Length: 357
Image 1 (cartoon, rainbow, N blue to C red):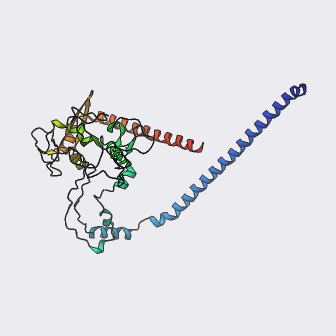
Image 2: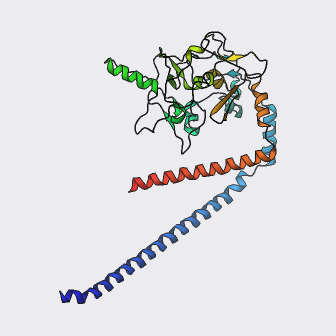
């Protein structure tokens, strides 16, 4: 025991020496890696400069090429194409497509004009992948703090606090309608609907649409959360957990929707004084009409405008603020966007840390 006590300082000194040796070796190896990185970066930079210098004479246009390009542009014949495509995300009703006869000249099939042949075609898959699906209730997109959940059955996209205030699910999420259909199928020992759409019997009692985020009413019907917010603003609050109430006080089948031309459900009237145009809330949203919501305390004010007054009213609302206020709001928007990107990077980095641990 005394020998061990006497040799303890020597052991501690040797341990500290080995520790410093490891630190020096690691520092040396790190310096070597950094030097290699700098060398690779400089080498790639020189190669890029050499490639640019070699291709500069080739890319420079000659006067002959410019004249040929001008003659080609003057002789080009524009291709006229008119098509009206309307996408209804919250309604089963499919609007009729109206298109004028198109003339195609085979001589221009490979020209630059052919790049515009897909103009006006809405690709939901590409749009969703690039921008993300908007919430079916508030029409805002997903953020780091407010995720958009997609129903695993009917693919309805909503914020949970806009649809039905609940805690975030840990597994696949189903909307209220699909969850009840699944429960009924399990009880009746029948095969559940796996086609990705709701049963054709489930219709919105306010616009007769069958897709989108549906909520159950107190009388057993189903209505869009969006339609309920606009038509039952006195009795329905966005994100409430209770069933939708107040359906008995609405007049159905009285007005004809100016967009889908169907005399079903309940319609809104244009908020412009003296205008008698009516439309379903879901149809107005899908048609891109101007719909404005403002919150005053705990109350919401909803105003929707027909196609004749949407553009004019949108300009009026945008001109309520002066140039200084608009500039400040733009700066705030830029700062918030930077903060959003920073938060996304932090979240991504933390997820990668968890994977590598």
